[in-house]
Image (cartoon, rainbow, N blue to C red; front, side, top):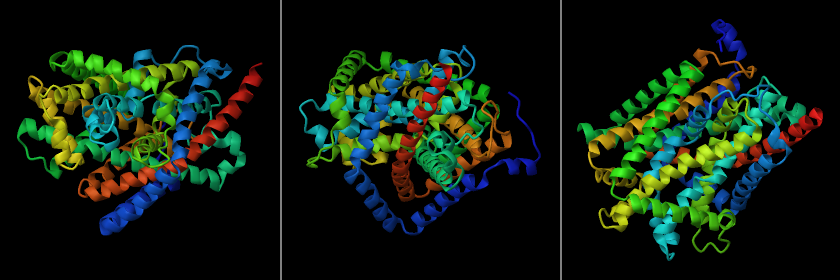
Length: 514
């Protein structure tokens, strides 16, 4: 695929600068407000966030369960036979496609939370009050990172893939996916609002994700090298990550493929090391099987429990939060998955997506999470007491992860492996985000056309600036995370519009074929 190289003036004429820059400037303005009025901002955002989760929680839960059921229907209905594109052979092999898909969707966060999320549940009053505390502490991560959130990605990926590869639309935007339902409204204020919301959510979500785990990288490097874990070191890590994913995305899909493959190899090397050398192999396997059984047995209950009496508010603080977090990421990851799914049927895309997504996610949580849990239960390391003593903060999570990994043989090597894994995971995740954001910046872009390298470079740099700024203010980072979660509410409405539009357009397509 050859890149067109228009002049700078012609390139600017092809770009939708308002949709590109207005959300970015809005978030910058918000960050300034967070710095100037940190306490007032936190209070207001928490009120909005609490209202959405407490009063409108059913909205998120019903979308989650509904989208999952829609994904199954798409597989086993006539829609499942629709091929995304005019080629019978998939554009990418199963491994390449699966690795790019998995690493595009919150993979860095998956690695981070795999090591420590059982601590969050084991210290929660609701889970700690149950008979099988540790069983549920191991099971809940599989539910909150399992079929429902991956269903968000896959259903939208199918809709975007159909739009790009079957209908061959030239506008690669959220709003364009709503055209079958909204018609000419897409070209007016309605389409503009949809696109602005999407880019805003994309920027807010990526900034907070970037800022979340980089302090862990800083602490790990500090542990190995003896360097002080300062903000300067964290910024250096962010710049290094930016350089890696910029080089990768600069060379287009070939660079992304190689980056994703390298990431997967490092990831499974880390998992194999912990599994075979950690001394908790039997416990990891047995707890993993138990967790899978608990989730399968209670799946519908977990998806629909609202705690109407608010005895614990667990669904509001956990399940609804996670669904909102994944919904924000639905702006970028599904577009990328849809792009790389050319040549696959809808059924192959969804079932294959569940296979690769859940295989990677479940394996990570079962091995890394249950290793730390095994150390806790067998008295080798009391991570839970240390975590609770530090108030359950992010810093407490970072310390707990490093302490857990310190129990492995050659812990210095493990720290280096963890750092390399997280850097490559971040790089591959932001490869896809940069590519999607660059495509989004165009007024029109053919489905088989690559964005100009200058546009990709612009986004690669811009996406790193906010996380760097947020490093200096933990309060601002927390506030921006709240903004991204709040942004999930309108994103959910847009998701519904996209799904309804897809069914309308795909239904017409099937009628045209018969």
